[in-house]
Image (cartoon, rainbow over all chains, first blue to last red; front, top):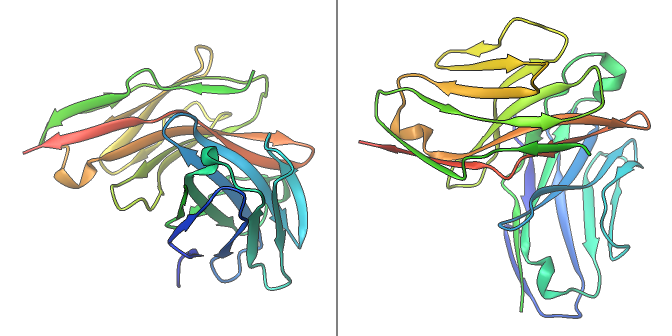
Length: 118
Length: 116
């Protein structure tokens, strides 16, 4: 079974531009979460989508948005890029939220998209 | 505050030896899950081991085991018979449930180097 895929793997943008990152979850997985990883802040939760609905959102400005399609693929968008948005953006998928199963919800991570803002 | 603290930014160990990575966390939840994730230099994050907070028995996965002390909110990872392939960043995390949804709260990570 193919793992979580993220495209593109590397991206260089300039300040003020916008960017769209894509994530394809493992086949059959319906929940997709996004995380931002930086050396200073570590891994921070951005948002989670399930059945095309945003279920949870982290503490990020409105420039960060996302969506999920009917095939569970997800995109995140960052508008008006700032230098501080340079980071590794990780996507993780899981079958369904743990609250549905009462059990451990293992999230499978993709390789990430390395975004550099200049 | 819902936080995870990994007090060792970097550690090193000789091949075949044992190393313990520490993790403490703070949560007001009663039922939660704890995880150790490994992120090798290639950047693919993978799950190493997980622990349900309501289980007293410490989880074990081959050479990896945890020492879970719920009252102390401590969740350390022990790697036995360290191998060169264990070189990676290790992140401790727990699930935080908010409004029926969940997210992972991560520590800042410990960079582990296994030396030949």
